[in-house]
Image (cartoon, one colour):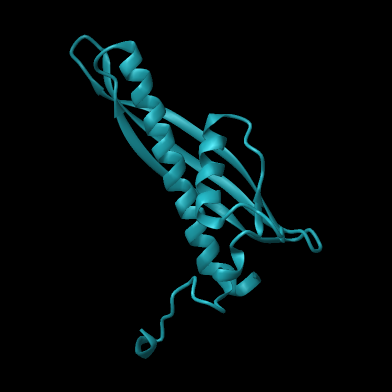
Length: 146
């Protein structure tokens, strides 16, 4: 890869490699936040020598997309976005941030329990997608602030 000018983002000495274990994500206040923090810590490591704080706001919405002739909703899109900010502990200045957004879908056919399980699984998948987007942006921009 050296010939093309690209190098792995997590290569030894790369700016993104220095993020591992250095970002403390704000404590979750609900299940969505828990799933988000869990994925961020899977990707970035549990904080040990914290240099940055990551705060976030999660917004989700269920949108009915499949409707039967008698107006029963059979399919939902779960849309969501997260506004996030990374702040340096040394000086308290914002070093990165933005908005990530995505969607997933789930079926509401079957029993009530099955529908609730499908919705919970969709929310879990959505938080993982959004967490992965945050990590990608952190890694891509780390050279400018890390």
